[in-house]
Amino acid sequence: MYVVAIPSYNREDKIATKTLQTLFEGGVKKKQIYIFVANKTQEKLYVENVPKSLYHKIVVGKKGIANQRVFISNYFKAGQYIVSLDDDVEELQCLKNDKLVKIADLNAFFNYAYKVLISEGLFIWGVYPVKNPFFMYNTISTDLKFIIGVTFGYINRKLKTLVPSAEGKEDIEQSILYYKMDGGVVRFNYIVPKTKFNAPGGLGTDRFEMNRIASETLKKKYPDIVTIFYRKNGMSEVRLARLPRII
Image 1 (cartoon, rainbow, N blue to C red):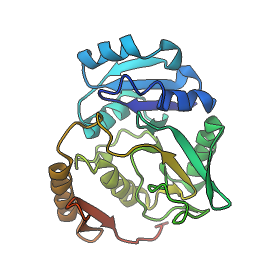
Image 2: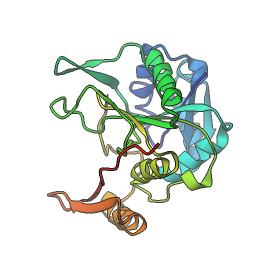
Image 3: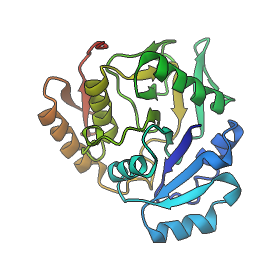
Image 4: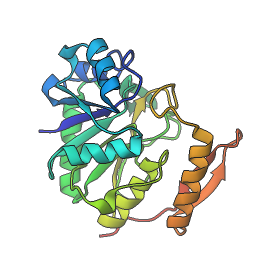
């Protein structure tokens, strides 16, 4: 059975109406759902504001999303199948006839995603990172792709070599680390999360500076894989090289 891990910070007023409600409507059982918070103060806020009927346990972990993801992997046993969702996911949507429609049975999808991992001999899956049906396509890829941290699943291995360090772009580095170790990653290019990216709460840090440092760190560590580009607002971003599945 899979578990759902939700790292959350300062969103005790939103998590119930977004990710937890999404999971409830998608057929995911309460006993499978864990919320990971940064400290005891946050724990108190979540206990007081989030209905207990929507989750199994609130766990005090670490502050900072990169640190929290490491904590989550260490919290669960090796071999555990973990589905990780951000705390403000309103829906998972599927491309059908050039339109995006809500996935009604999330439980079925999470179980299917696990079967794909096993059949491919891989350890992490993700979804399309941009909510735009024009760019999406009905394929499941296994080459090097960006596995966005908003929604992904993985088979836990507790390996230090899979621990990213680029705060703010830890999901990009995680994609690279899994590819380098396993020769590929699974991405469902016809599925995308509906969420508000970079909403208040969550990281609570200067994203421009954090992105700059993370981008430069990734370029230095993986010069043959990462290139840096800049958005119109000056935000640093990175692109991954097109590398094939390695078998």
